[in-house]
Length: 136
Image (cartoon, rainbow, N blue to C red):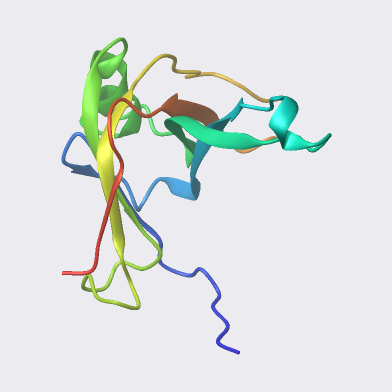
């Protein structure tokens, strides 16, 4: 069974490669389940898939310097922008697919933490429209 350790994940938001700031990036996608149970179901619940949705959850190391993370993300607040995420920074391939789409930058937490903590930003962004998977 193949195993993998994430060592060099790739994340791009609005064509900004954010690898140097990214501690964690998670893409989740799901489908609503719609109950279509009827009397012919013989007491068993039946479901079909409904609307699809997704979300990218990120944890960044904050940087307030000019042209760095906060300066990149702050102007995007409230906009829908493209994203790309991969398990590795290497070339896209069958063993390193890319997932792309658009996300709504619905929030930004520029300052969080307690005394002695590293300056991190934990945020999640909902997808807007389809998420695609490609291997080339």
